[in-house]
Image 1 (cartoon, rainbow, N blue to C red):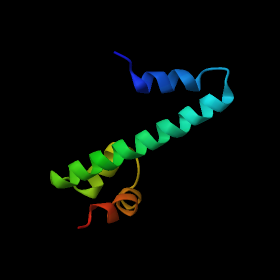
Image 2: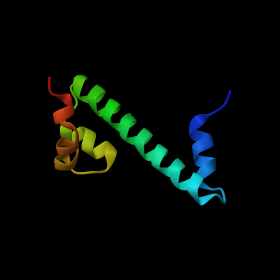
Image 3: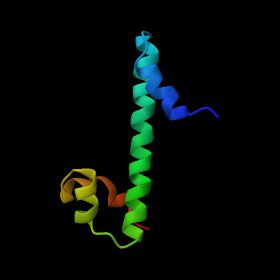
Image 4: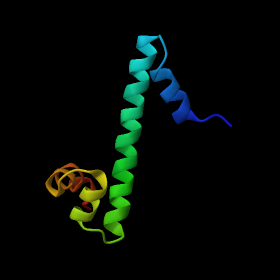
Length: 73
């Protein structure tokens, strides 16, 4: 079964700079979506902003500023 993430990673290492940069952009979008989904799940599970920030390696203020609006109503 093909692994799309592995395919994107491989594309970042190739000689085709256009394809490599497009793959980097797709990986960035994927990482942002995964982060948003997991932060929402952690908040729903009762995790504090501090707990989430520690796991992500950022400050509490950074993670709160980035995600709090998407979790409201």
